[in-house]
Amino acid sequence: MEMMKRSCEQFLAELAGKAPTPGGGGTAALVGAAGVALGSMVGSLTIGKKKYAAAEADIQALNARSDILRKELEALVQADAEAFAPLAAAYGLPKDTPEQAAHKAAVLESALDAACAVPLQIMEKCAEGIVLVEEYAAKGSVLAVSDAGCAAALCKAALQAASLNVFINTKLMTDRAHAAELDAKADKLLGEFVPKADAVFASVTEKLRMR
Amino acid sequence: MEMMKRSCEQFLAELAGKAPTPGGGGTAALVGAAGVALGSMVGSLTIGKKKYAAAEADIQALNARSDILRKELEALVQADAEAFAPLAAAYGLPKDTPEQAAHKAAVLESALDAACAVPLQIMEKCAEGIVLVEEYAAKGSVLAVSDAGCAAALCKAALQAASLNVFINTKLMTDRAHAAELDAKADKLLGEFVPKADAVFASVTEKLRMR
Image (spheres, each protein chain N blue to C red):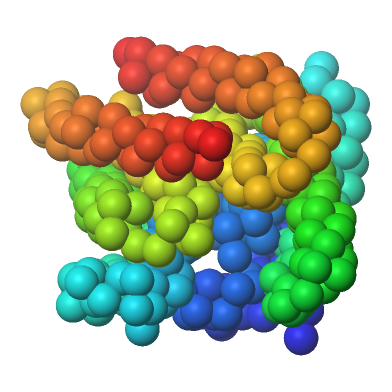
């Protein structure tokens, strides 16, 4: 059964067990999707409200982007689970002869590269989520502002969690130049979007605590 | 249907819509449960491994606590959804006469108090999750260290997200002394456990990036 078709309860029970999937990467995508969905909720609670009529078109456009982004992150939950099998197969290859060892090293290197691709995509989508959430927090109904703050915290955590799934794979790569390139991509996303998410969260906290 | 029995896909679709539940509080509980489940996964991948035989008993004990904690957070997903109805009902009360207004104010004050109770419990459970994750990161298999780091990021985000659902309710309370008391509880949990989660996440990142 596809990951997203599982009940929440079943997903978490499988996550807790020793099966390699779902794992940290897929969970990051799921949490990112939850953050994006909370953004949509802010939009859904804003649309049609007289007080926010001036922002209506913007919010409609945000919700359209947000729905697509949520579906993309949901697809990445599945993609992360599917990306694990080739890596596990590579680890299982024999290395009894020099030929086998060389073959295993080559297959493993390529599997590690593929295993980085999904968490990097998850990171990019979470970064996009943070951009949307920033706009929801600024333009959405104040009645839902806490949900915008929650969304920022969740998209940020998902971005950070996904980054660990890049670093655990690049760490093992033989081609250090390529590994450094992938690490740099992850670092750039962290460097730009963690502070952005923190700023949204801080501004929401401030609004909520001001009287 | 109970929240946790919904498919992941359905939960997120409902979250994105304008229905008030599931909302930010329930999602915080779900993400906290996911963080705790990732801790269990680290444990599950450590149990039975010769290299970690010395930690086996500790990890078994951690997994037993972690399973209970996950179920408690799952129950709070449901509890958060159920706590919303009385608050919505209180907001809907008429206040056309002074008597009605006084009655509404009293009912609302009590509903706000009840609406703080669930996110405060979610915060306490996420804090407990961070304590477990700290131990998983220290004693669990290094092969699963990235999952321990993900768990820390998710439990922290859930703790922070839940805090906003305390603050949005205390903000509206008339009894400011009681509101300050609840805010102080939330602040204490944030002050103690956000840095703890950050430390776990930083130590995992360091391990992954060291060569």
